Image (tube, rainbow, N blue to C red):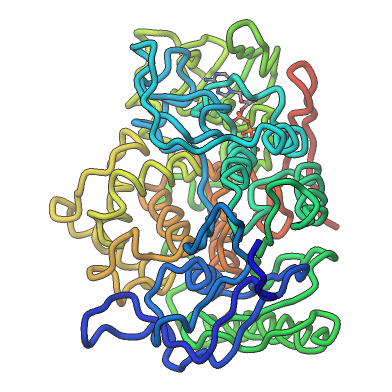
Length: 540
Ligand SMILES: Nc1ncnc2c1ncn2[C@@H]1O[C@H](COP(=O)(O)OP(=O)(O)OP(=O)(O)O)[C@@H](O)[C@H]1O
């Protein structure tokens, strides 16, 4: 290690995203002083956390040069700091939604172990791999990581098949194994079940940067609504536009932290009140085109179940994921699908949307008709279903994120035969369809930049919002929201939840965190392949 006493130091720095003369600065004012010392455990807190973590990861140009410095370099780093930034990303983007569940993998898929090593790439069609770097793997650290991040039994799995939570743990291991000088983790606990959250939090807390071979200082990014782990010693509260609002040891800032939390809750309340008093169009206008709108109980009772599973089983190479599952979904019912990471929630949903190869199964009964090859087809099934999920988010970002504006992104929700079709459609929509898109964009405050901002330029929170709106506009019979709100700011998320309370169609929700779960009437909990629980949710 170098002899410097700080990990990162910012002194009187202005940050720019480009060297061009008139390029605007990242924050309007210079950051006078910010410093992280060894043994301090920092949380970057608030809506500006992603941007500030990018500042710390050296993504911007600082002026004057050296006004951002890294002092705590390992000997192997020579002069250049190695900063690893683990941002919120879901599963690996695949070529299409179903690729994740296929038995025969994409030519270029890797095992979980190869992914964590991040050393070689190549095709599975040939027996050799092309080394992309000559990094030496610290096997001692690797073993510590896979044990602590609960990856031991997943090492030989195809990485594309990993569940969302499993993938997040693998991404973390991959970054730490690079033995960076500084590790920045945005939203470290998103998408993790409570058990995995506790394990990872304990691991990060005990990751002493001196004693563990290959260890390094860690900085995490959290939202206002997240619980700050007790092991965090320092906090830096950041605004997306203004930059640092305050910073320092948490023990001295409790009052300020409480004050900010209270203020953001109040703002939310005011926001809600303003909405209803301003005479904005009511939610009713957004949902009255839904075929279930206004349906009375006595009519609903006579309808067939939108979906019924009559003893469904799913396995991979003989290993059961779901076994003999019986489940009936009434039209207009709302379900919270619960279960730990890897328990089969996404697998179950992919069966419903026919993305899963084992979907052609007469034990899946849709609107009273058993699914049999030749009887129903993928497009027909999906004309009634819409979804937002981490898998879809990853593919959308990769395939359409740099091409489609906010408006075009939302409009692709009208591609009614698949959630997986991202071809632009706005220009060919009829007047009414355009009015619906406009209403939704305006209701969620996305109308102003709808044509000028690309999907990939949005914050993760707004990307999630766009994907949410995208799945509503075709008024689907079944709405699948798999981790649709994780990574979202509270304001827009509450707005989505409010709308869902009035939504007349069937809703299936997967969420690990209570605050991110919209109100549901029933739950299905997957416990183990043979064990599950179905019940009603009574919130009072
Ligand atoms: N193609 C595949 N081959 C082998 N195993 C797979 C495949 N696809 C998924 N799995 C495994 O099936 C299990 C269930 O995965 P699934 O994504 O359904 O879990 P989940 O409950 O949605 O988890 P999370 O909460 O992390 O999103 C996991 O252990 C996963 O690794």
